[in-house]
Length: 428
Image (cartoon, rainbow, N blue to C red; front, side, top):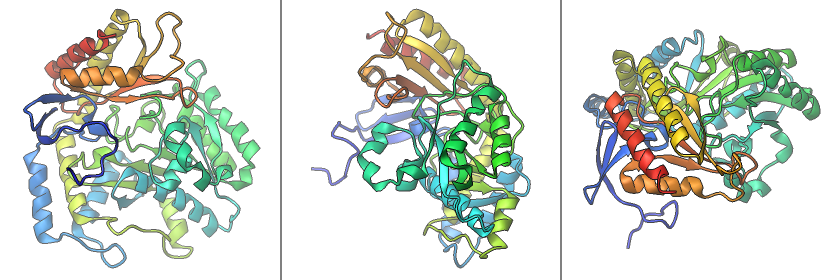
């Protein structure tokens, strides 16, 4: 009997090694990691130089508490990250995972307004659907019914107004204007921030608004004195073909940018918030401290992993590679759409791509979820790992597969991924 508390009752093979875009289990089966786990393994598996950087830091300085020390490696990493993301004047609040990072952004937005004397601002507007994390605050901010429903008695619902999902039929600016109505209904004097995923991840596979959306969002937020939080935990760090997905189509600088997953690419737990100089100065010139913290925030070993991963991303041009290989993969998915009528849509940016599944007779989603899980299970049996989901339309309807292989994937490996997915879709 295992002593592990598994995530579900399904059987779990034991992974024993990984290299590049592949993983192997203890039975010797090989899997093409078409989703980078949960879109984490951005530089691929088995990078010896990252492992060596982690080991060297662990030998030198494994841990300090953020209330007592900084570290050379954290200072170096923050400076490199600001440059890579082109966010001059920003400050990195480093934590262990995306949920912690979004929790931090939410609290930071609240404290920012309190320090300004605007103590009535506490609400955070997010979208339906959306997913910002599993911890209670991040989950409360999320608009993903299946993951949220069990815990709704613990949530103060009026603190989390919801805006509709991006509408591909609207121009970006017109789509963004819908935020104004939500602000007015919530009482703009009570709203601290608006938070969104520039390219949606797990809740609505790779859905993105039209150009001009984020620029208008930023304008509306400034008009109402609301902070703009870009949740780039999944979409950031080059995955969408740009260091920041929020800048794919618009030249904007959010007040807070939340990062995770690809920061350390699975080699260590690492996430963070990039806070604008204005937000940082307001907090530090007020009470003098961010009233929040985690034990492992700014962990030196994780920062060393992040620094080494960033070396790989820049040296190998993986942001540009995400554009090129993403275009190849999206074109292949469009071809599969023509071949398999249950594929209603293929979409996304860079190597964050989504396949929307539904009823070919109606061109709409199935009334009951399950098709995405079945396709994902057939893909797994063939040796391809994907990231299935459902509920994008109303919490129940709307099946999709999220695809996001490592940014280091080769052209030949993209074709292998497409062939395996073709076989999984052919199963029904």
